Length: 143
Image (cartoon, rainbow, N blue to C red; front, side):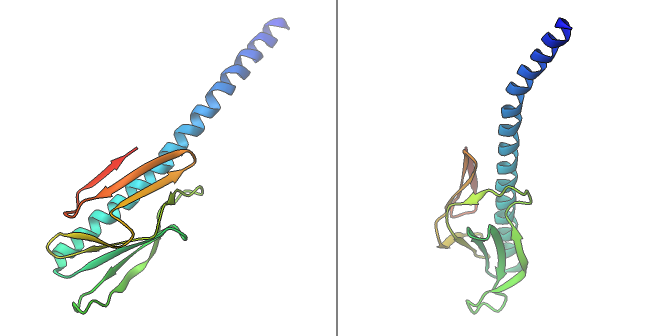
């Protein structure tokens, strides 16, 4: 009986140590997944502008935690939605974005922020990642 109690105590202690580590790892995984979604959307929207020969925009909504791709095929500075709004993260626990941001992509490959800035901060729990986009579309992610 004593051996069973000792074994049970060891299992409980190991579980108490492992659960916070697993939760922290899951938070980091969910945040990196959301960051990958945003950086992928930035890259693909830039490539669409280059390949199509007209401007595109990526509108990121920090309230609804979505992004929307828009295009200006008539070159009239009037952008129309391409498809529907896409969630920043597919997880039930959502990473937050620090501010609404609109990035405009020109056919030459240049990127500019028409709303917000070229630096976005995504947060989930106590983890934070900073996404910085250069004027030429280079993306740098720092923890």
